[in-house]
Length: 197
Image (cartoon, rainbow, N blue to C red; front, side):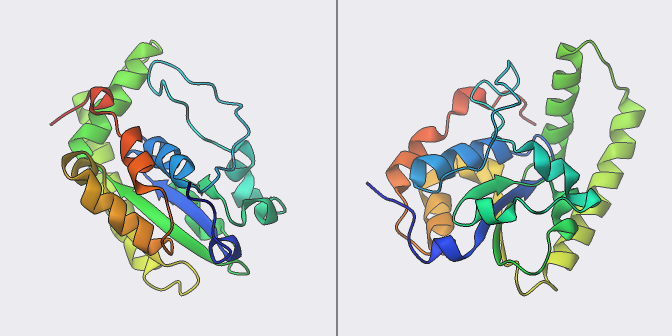
């Protein structure tokens, strides 16, 4: 069985991207592959994420300077939404797996999640969000390219479902090898791919 290599314990594996872009699935894949997740289980699984969110609440306090928990993340995977990446201090080394997904699907998934909570969005709001998301993603990619302590691997959620073996091998190589790639592929559940465009 694959485990966490001594090399991987020298950095923090960060799973990032927009909300509803496949970050929870990637966290589950890494856990299956041998990279333990840093999570507090405060946010429980629900109909929108039946396998769980794999979140660590203190991540949300990064803008307030709460980063004393980072030593706990060494050798582990932690989910950090893309907007919070610049708040990770450069005193640590990171490997960022950045999830991308068709933006129309991201918006449809968010709309479905809000509807399940009794909230609604309009087409105009979705169009405005799409522009903001596109701009944010471009800015984030440019910023990541200037961070030598934070190399990034961009993984398409759509490609991961279409050609899992190739994408999982890319992830394994990026994280130094030794992951259980078969177990990682088993996590991919196409039945949860509900918002398709």
